[in-house]
Amino acid sequence: MTNATQIDRLGHQLELVWSQVDDETVSCLQQLIEDHSGEIILAFAERILADEEVRRFLDLETVRLRLAAALKDWLVQTFSVGNQSSRASYIEYQVMIGNIHSRINLPLHLMNLGMSVLKREICDRIGRQSWRPALMIDTVIFTHQILDFAANAINEPYMAAVTSNIGYGQALRVALSGHSLALECEQLKGSLFEWHRTVIVNLFNGSSLSEVPSLQRSDLGLWINHKASFSINELPEYTTLQEILREADQRYTDHILAPCQNGLKVSETHLQTLSDHVSRLALALSSVIDRALATEEARDSLTRLFSRRYMHSILQHEVAYSLTNSSSFAVLLIDVDNFKMVNDAHGHQIGDDALVQVAETLLSNVRTSDFVFRYGGEEFLILLSEIAVDLAHQKAENIREAIAGLRIPSGTGSEITLTVSIGIAMHDGHPDFNRVVGAADQALMTAKEAGKDRVVVAN
Image (tube, rainbow, N blue to C red; front, side, top):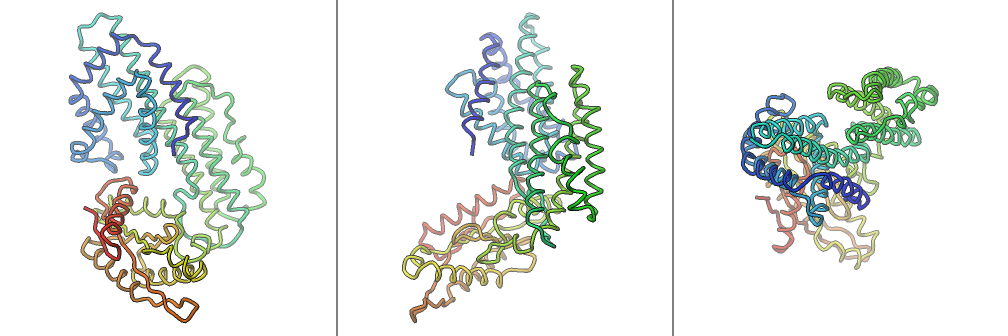
């Protein structure tokens, strides 16, 4: 959910950018975008698709079918939001883009690469115009200012999402024990991401880094240098954390803080290296968490299914695997029909017993390679890996029939029967897993509206 304070703050920044530009500059840029957007987007696609890492997320067909029209609309909006009434919705749109980038795990430097390409292509076409020199300078300056604002508006929620994702990227093996240690490490991960976010945001805003502590003096650095020697000194992650901390702190001090203090530009290469160090530190902390958490914490306390907490990491991994290996997977969203009536008529204890039997039925009707989650209340989510749509549909029908065959004691001598509605969606190659989950949810809604107790496959 978008934070109102965040919208207000970004709104003030946007207002400042627009207050410094005149109508002629805006009009000329808007006409240039309208006349040359096709060329700009084509050059943008050619440049970013030359990067091998970008091709994990995009191909030429995707750019042509999906991204080109969206990017044109985005450019037109970006150079047309001088109207006060349209600013809030524009900022909310940038926040949404940042959240999508977070979900698909798009590296920050790739987003920045795309923004740099757009700046270069627009400014290149400004240079070909027969405008007077002062107008050319004003249009170039405004292009940089408005695209820098857009980058900040996108990257800020991206970094905030990374910070707030507890267990993001965390492996699912859990062993040993130590809840307090696990909690400490989760808090340290959040602190680390917040430190990184502050550095990035300050650089984008042109703010000083003097108030940002070095990594050695950050919460994580102090913990590694003092407390960790007592709590994890026998684990291999302890040495790993020490080594990465030293490397990352040296990189930050020499190649980011020093140039910033001397008024020099910080290179994207050094920012990417710092991001890599942060990721490695977070990964090492996740490994410590894995060792500290008790196995049952990965599972819902009632049904013993995987809890929703781990869904993000598993779906993200499955999307990456699917894109890399050209395989497909299915998401099934399952809702127990009229479950409130069970609770109302027989009490919550009987309702809980019914959910446990539903969960056991789900587990007995999937493969060991599949994932079953308690999605919330009486809703469940199943991820069927490497499966075709016809087999996923058959699996869903088997589940529906098996649950319809349950006979659950009511506690008063009678038996309760249940039905379920199921929505199925196949992963279509989109890197954002919310897309396939949303499609399954829509299919589930269609099943409910069509009378319940049925399976519907998303179009």
